[in-house]
Image (cartoon, rainbow, N blue to C red):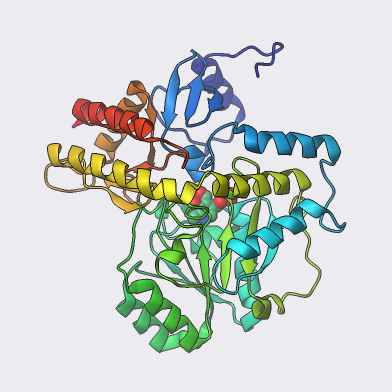
Length: 415
Ligand SMILES: Cc1ncc(COP(=O)(O)O)c(C=O)c1O
């Protein structure tokens, strides 16, 4: 809806406002940025009325598509009924949501603490691990991303997102996917660690999937040393990879699961979820003003229902296979555009120069060119050279074709 008191302005006008009034760390994609004014299903529409296919979903948030009526309607109804109280009162939506999450999360995970962002969920998950084990040290992975809070930023293993010039003690990073390195680290000082935190598939690290035996071996090591395994599924959760949670691909159940993003399909909600035993360690009063907000909880309940009704997990697998095949054939034709990696509709293609080194400049050219052809894709990786494709899970075969057409044209322009 357009606010008539404030008509849609151009991207240039918005850029001027941003540069004047936001803290400079808030960065944006594109040399020629667009101003997005509305969304519909798998599409975003800019201030000139141009439609783009959304290949990034607001970083894996809009898995059920933009402005989906099956979600908007119950949310609107909830807003008319009760917009906000807080977790000190009993309200039905958040408790129904906790019940629902217990039924879709793997293994014995059954108790949730709700908050408003992925960073907060990670912070809470690590606090819970410290309370349960009585230890303070944390293991994390190179290439992982876990948020902007102090602890979240410090367990992050990507230089670009570790802004804090004075890192906290007690965090050790190990190479992602390397079980021997982890074994060596634990053999020296395994009993010091409260938690090992990791994304099952690294998102911002450039869509990195470890070898099949890796997560089961990590699970065994955590058990041996009494370390809680914390999976950050803020990005991979809710059918992005074809299952409710990515850890299901390996049959590994974490002790704590951090979720957010696609859970609310655009409404700010997050949670850390654990089993009865670990939950029993967190008994001192805890509250979150927005954790369990009835509107966000209603959005999450409607989102989960929509995922089930529309079988979005199946669609992620089927459309993901089509997208992967198409990206692979583009990669065969263009040496600088690497073969896709990832699972389901979480795919990334590395961009390299003639000698095979990461090429962030060419990556930006491709990203810009995709946009000019009508596709908004993502960009991740320690070297900022991985183009990522994570569209809404509602996309159909024709929309996969549209994404591939834009990628083909963009790669040809910049390749
Ligand atoms: C894996 C992962 N964890 C945590 C976060 C932080 O979430 P938020 O931005 O909601 O605080 C992100 C954000 O991109 C993420 O991708």
